[in-house]
Length: 244
Image (cartoon, rainbow, N blue to C red):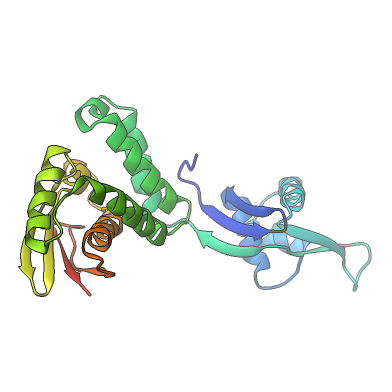
């Protein structure tokens, strides 16, 4: 679990590794600029030699760096990266992830709903671990939209959106309204109860776009992309999506 420490993701010969720990990441950051000696690493981190020795051993065993004899002084060793730096956790993702875990551990869990809180924790967890999951969530949204479309009968745009509105409300998916048909413009309200949570930064905008794109593709054979022209991040105004 990411407990608020920095997390980074690296690609190695053994696969992808998510590393949680500020000292190890500090060492790897330092090595991005080239090979460094043991003494240089100790000086850069400000840690004891014994501590750095343990971290270097762990990083070597994880295939994240390699150790070589210093050609200028055979009594010393130098260290260099043996991996590719892929991603790094950033605020506010870590903070929101911890906030969601706190909600899950509190009596508020019953008020918000366990499944909903876990769903959001997973989303914020991706961000906390340095992963931009928007492309993945959009693709999942499209697949879900295509599956949901089998519960809908209409194949005419106006009737389809009326049927979708009723379906969403019946199954507590949220609410939306059709603002215009040409261009297609939709106003999304409280998708999967996002407005009810006390965390203002929302994570489902890309997912909801994928859901609509999947439905439109399945029911109207329309290969389209929906873009945000407004977001609900700060003041809980509805998201407005327009077709492109």
